[in-house]
Length: 112
Ligand code: SF4
Figure 1 (spheres, rainbow, N blue to C red):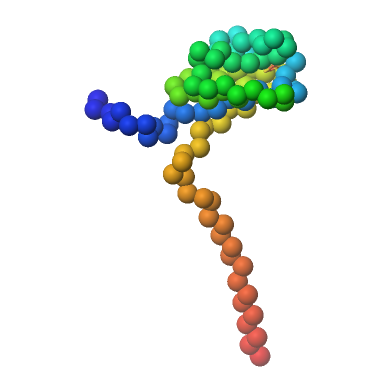
Figure 2 (cartoon, rainbow, N blue to C red; figure 1 turned 45 degrees about the vertical axis):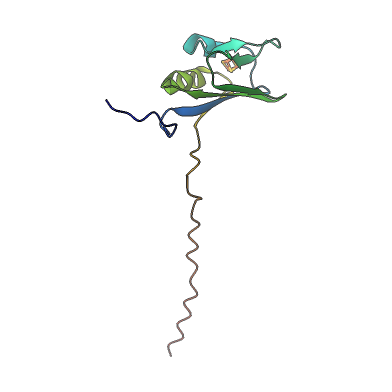
């Protein structure tokens, strides 16, 4: 009940990206998740009022969300017949860099 109000929550942030090259305006995504909208090119985009941020380029549009509706976004991604939607949990700032385990050991055991 007593959740801290600091912005350290890492369980609700995620980003949803539409590949504008792949999107063909079928709009199956809108049915699954109303945060998807049609943009002025007739392709999928995001309702800016529903997202923390929306970033659009020529080839993609990415919205960042901080809510618990990632399953809706995943449902939209699953419904897209062109597989144009990607859903990714937000990266944590304090995430440690992946440790590269180089297990190359030169075990030259010349035992004769
Ligand atoms: S369902 Fe896929 S192809 Fe259709 S509008 Fe949405 S992102 Fe584009």
